[in-house]
Length: 158
Image (cartoon, rainbow, N blue to C red; front, side):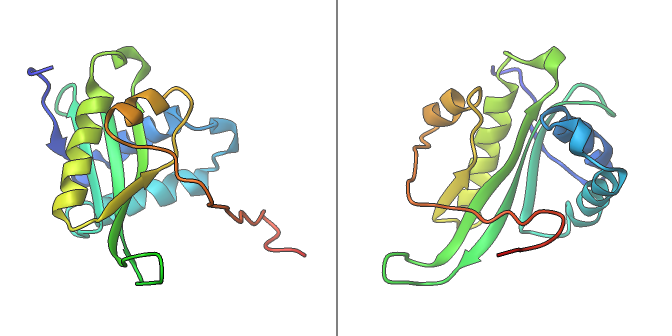
């Protein structure tokens, strides 16, 4: 794995980040609006917004093998929460032709270090069944008690 080249992503990587992100999602549910919003957000924020970090393994000057994208959030102090900054790993994706070569581990490890350096006291992610062993080997563990509200296209209903 010592030969892997991991670098910080920049705005020029937006199209490739979109391609990799789509590869791990159900593309039947992804609209053109979602795709352009994601790509345009990456293009606008990477390199200028310190709260958006992405690390990539390039194949060549225009193509990426893998990426890990994370976001820094600010939490508020509470009775059971110390507050401060926390990170969320938003996406880890590897091109199917480049899997099983350590790319996801390398990009995720670089992102974890960057999130720690940014001051994040904790880092969370949502693991797929396939990705869980990698994240466990990097020190992640389950955290019970969380729930989510995901309003549908019609908005919140009672």
